Length: 418
Image 1 (cartoon, rainbow, N blue to C red):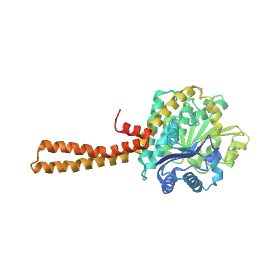
Image 2 (image 1 turned 135 degrees about the horizontal axis):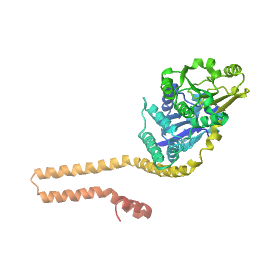
Image 3 (image 1 turned 60 degrees about the vertical axis):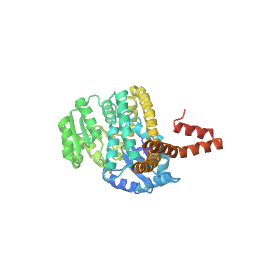
Image 4 (image 1 turned 45 degrees about the horizontal axis):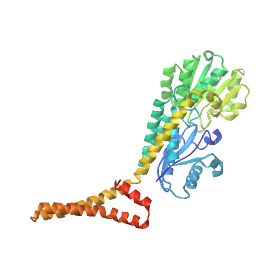
């Protein structure tokens, strides 16, 4: 059994490629079914966020396994292998374990130490359990990663400062507008990132908050918290001109805000500037919007420079966190290697128990026939000892005859001999 991590992220692929290999929530079950139907795949988890798409797998190892899995990923998304290959990373066993721990702890995030990724990893794992059996090794790897992420949060200052994609978007808005108290903000979506953005903006006393979402019920709960107005996605076109800032993060597979829509809004605004921050992958705002005069469009990749300014205080904590990951991944691999001996230990115990039962039955039979108890007990002990040490004795003799000092020492250690 081998543990694997295969994927792309913001470090290895641009947004134009990442958005083509995402798995939408609606297609996740289908993707998992297809993935688990692949030969030799024993268990799998699909993690798909705006910054990464990763497959975590428990598989039976074989020579062309990597090519098979890359081919599955490309075929599923209708991509050529040459389009994806150079952006893919492949981690196996200890590297896969430490990678997942780093991801769950926020050490591999666009925003170092951001806490949202742990919830996304937990959700991906929970989704994989819905109607799908998981291997015990994969299950243990994820549970261990959750505990490592908690330890990193508890023992280091990795999450001390409020840094996130949502925070970076709000920082950008404050850089462009002198005071947020005079601007209207349209938030598109009602997920975790938008929730964080809404809270940041409310803390800076924006003039007005409008939340557009597919389902009003979910948006209303957030709106009540931050004193915002709720509209439907279909109303964006008619309300867009009111917004000085638009921050969008939905799971839509197609753009929600198009170039024509923004052109009409700018005309109504008499070309007063608009800031559009598109955090979604796939993108919610057509890239062509960025070519319009007075429309300032930033994608999730564009936020990188802003985010880097907020990372200095987390770098020392990241060094501590990496030490924890190295220690914990090493312990996990020791546990994993020990699992390989479980069947052998079970067989050895069963063999010893069979010998014990056989000799015990003979001794009891002799006792019922009136034999001398002391003699029968002594004979039982003698025979049991001889039967149990017979195979190890042969192995010790053979190692000595072969002059194999290393094997001889291993056998001595196994038998508890000084």
